[in-house]
Amino acid sequence: MLKGFLSAIGAYKLYEKWLWHQVKNGVKPGHIAIILDGNRRWASEQALNPWFGHEKGAEKVDELLDWCLKLGVKSITLYAFSTENFRRSKNEVEEIMRIAQEQFRKILTDERIHKNKVHVKVIGRLSLLPKDLQQLIMDVENATQDYDEHFLNLALAYGGRAEIVDAAKKIADKVYKGELSPEEIDEQVFEKYLYTSHMSKQDPDLIIRTSGEERLSGFLLWQSAYSELCFLDVYWPGFRFIDLLRAVRTFQRRTRRFGQ
Image (cartoon, rainbow, N blue to C red):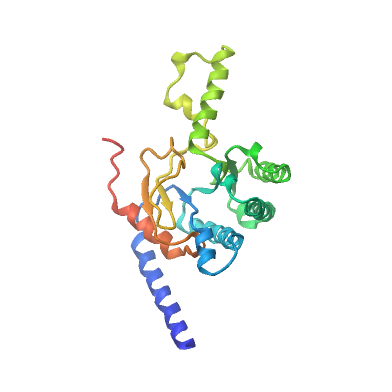
């Protein structure tokens, strides 16, 4: 049994090296966005409570950061919790919020964040989150606000339609106050009021969704117009470096025309 296990590890490492050799010299996506889907189904298959899946999923984000730094990816946007997710059971939502607090506390002292100058930003309707979590988010954002070598966006209490509505409200307020005229409003102006406006490159090159589902579920509706999409049949807690490499390889094999 042990021999078979070691053999499987060896095969995995060989496959990882082969994939790395294929993608290492190709064009890397500068901005990768991932819909972190399948935590609960992963837990169910292990006969565990849903929050164990969320715990494992949070741990996987730590690994993902290392992998993306290795690949030279500048920006990552992760869809972790939608506005619709508040409809889940009270116990599950409370556990997710607790896990989020733990992760933000870790980020505050994470050497990788400061060494690699990772600008951390939470996007979404933050007022819907617990007050103590809001404070932690503010602390993390303040601690990393001057960094611009890498960007890590975490979508919490996020909805793509909500983002567009919130941007429209801000623009309408500017028009009402006489600070902006309707004639000045174009795509470039609109983008300045999106949740991702702090980034020079808001649009993701590659969007990955785990769990086998093939839809965006409202994720980055404005920004995803010309993103390459990759749907992987693996639950987020089971996501591996080879899955990321496979997605990057898929991206590299596509011809991007941007509507031309």
